[in-house]
Length: 72
Image (tube, helix red, strand yellow):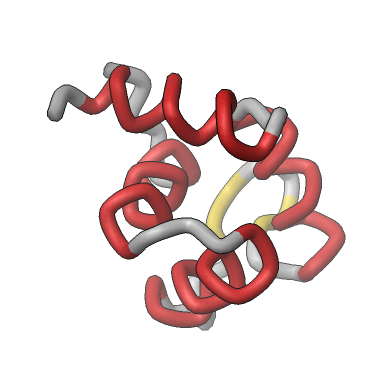
């Protein structure tokens, strides 16, 4: 599955775009001014996405990668 297919499936299943998730991550304290907080571990973010949005591990990692700047 391509990176874009992951993003498309996430939007289809949750109604949220990567930008929506970034805003939510800012509120949770995982991002500050659009940048990952250095003390936050990837597992904290992926666990949050799995628990709150019922994403699988691959889909949660795709969102995490958007936080790191991946766009395609």
